[in-house]
Structures are given as structure tokens and as C-alpha cells.
Image (cartoon, rainbow, N blue to C red):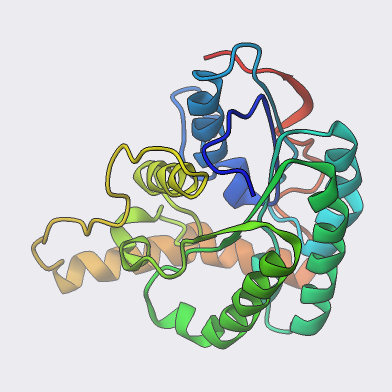
Length: 256
């Protein structure tokens, strides 16, 4: 394991979390932690190259089928793989199968790069998340074991209390906002052995309680704009990423 190494290339694999939802830019596109990390790494390595194969909504089988071989063939210095959470958040999930597919991906990716990074994904605090916590913890326990066996690093976002704060999540309650992604970038940066730029685990300042009418209005808006469409996609077998290409399909120089 090489810590604080100079990486000259980086490939990110995954779903909406790695694509960058919901760290929105003025033009409507998404930035996210992987783009931010690429920018930091590029500042220390002239000619730095970056690819992001992530597509929102992808399940672990799709990540294995559509992203893993492509990423391995790029022979990048650094690869990040985050997947499986979309699977465990579905009503029915075969967690051992998800773990087996994740292992298949790691077995292909670990020998193809200098450093592989895995993550324990963050979870928003709230009544919905509680239902899925046992599955998530089973998956994350396997991630730890997998990393130990293959020399990968693990970024523990799930264990960071601050990333469960609803104020770091977008209105859809599924994706981190811009500040959340900034903290994830710092978490990965520090895990790679670089000097800390700030304490990404620091709690947000206390805020005044939100009134019941405001909470009710937010719940209704969330249900109408996000929950109902999400249920509709589940019932019809569609995904938010259907037909979308990878974010950055080629390993090319990254412009700061």
C-alpha cells in the first residue's frame, strides 16, 4: 500500500453517488466528490488523467458488466469503486449475491491499479434509513473484509455521524448536497495519506428546530417530486440512468 503517493491517473466507478448527484453546477450538470478529488490530484501531477464511468441508478450487476472491465483496461494509478447501495435499498435484495458481485469486481480491479479505494457509503438519518441499516451493515462489513484481503483502502463515510445530518442531503433525501460532496472529497484525500485541509467529520452548527408546518410542507414536496417518481420507476423496472452514458468515458487529461 502506497500512501501519499503522486497519482497521475484516476478512474471512478459507481452510481449516482460517484456521478456527483446532487452537487449541481450553474449549468445544471453535476460535479461531486470524484471531480473535486480529481482536481486536487491534478494540481500535484502535470498531465493528470481522469475518467468517471459512473451512471446514476446502476445496480452492482450493471457496474460489473458495464464498468469494471473498461476501468481495468485503463490501467490507472487510482481506482475508486462504490456500488451495491442501490441494491440494498430495494424492497427485495440478495445481499450475499451483491457481496459476491462486489468481490468479482475487486478481484479484477485490484491487480489493475496501484491503489484501489472502496467506501462504506453514508446514510441519512431518518425513519426510512433505519429499515435498511441491517443490510447496509452486512454489506459494509463485507467491504472491510474484501479490502483487507486485496490491499484496498476503505473510506468510512457511514461511520461519520455528520454525514447522517439531513442538512447535508439534497431534497430528494437520497444524495448528498455540495457540502456533503466536499466532505467526502476530503475524506478520500486524507485516506490516501495527504495532509488534511479541514476536519471533514466536524459537526454542523446547531440550528433552530424546524416548525411542524415547514416539516410537513417539505415532506409533501419530497413525496410529490421524488418519492412517487422513484416508486414508479421501481414498479415499471426503469432506472433514472437508462440511456445515459458514463460521465467521463475516456481517461483523458483533466482541466483544472
